[in-house]
Image: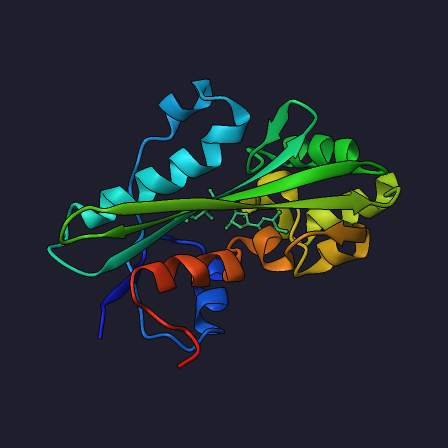
Length: 192
Ligand SMILES: Cc1cn([C@H]2C[C@H](O)[C@@H](COP(=O)(O)OP(=O)(O)OP(=O)(O)O)O2)c(=O)[nH]c1=O
C-alpha cells in the first residue's frame, strides 16, 4: 500500500480527497510564493503545485505527495485570496456579470525517487449580476476570505454562479478525475 500525503492546509482539498476513500495524511507545505508571481499565468498554478508537493516530498523518504494550487483568472488578471474585505469586494464586483476561469494545478511526487507528474484542470465559471448589498452580505459571512477570487462555489458563493463549463471539483480546489489519472500512473487505483 503506497503512503499518500496531501501537501495542503486547505480543508476543501482534504474533504475532496476523502470522497475517494483513500487513506492519506495531511502535511501542509511551507513555501514562499513570491517568486512565482513573475511566471506567466498559464504556468503559475502548476509550478506552485509542484513547489508545494516537492517541499513536502523532500522531507520524506517514501510515499506519494499531492500538491495543488487554485487560481481565479479574469482576463489577464489573477485574483488571489483577498487580503482585506475591500479587496474581496473589488474582486466580487469584477466577477459580477462576467465569465472567469478557475485553474487548479496538480502535482504528484514520488518521494523515494522524486519523479514528478503534473497536470491541471481549467473550468469556466459565469457569475450572474451580483448586487452591491449581496456582496456586502456575502463578505459579512466570512466565507470569501480564505478563497481564491473571494468566493466558494461550494458555499454561499453558489448563489452567484449561473453556470460552469468543466470540472466542479476543480473550482473547489482539486480536479478529482485529473488526480485519479495521475495516481493510476503511479500504480494507485482509486476504483479497485
Ligand atoms: C474558487 C474557489 C476557491 N476555493 C479555495 C480552494 C483553495 O483552498 C483556495 C485557493 O488557495 P490555494 O493557494 O490554492 O490553497 P490554500 O492556500 O488554501 O492551501 P494549500 O496551499 O496549503 O494547498 O481557494 C474554494 O474553496 N472554492 C472556490 O469556489
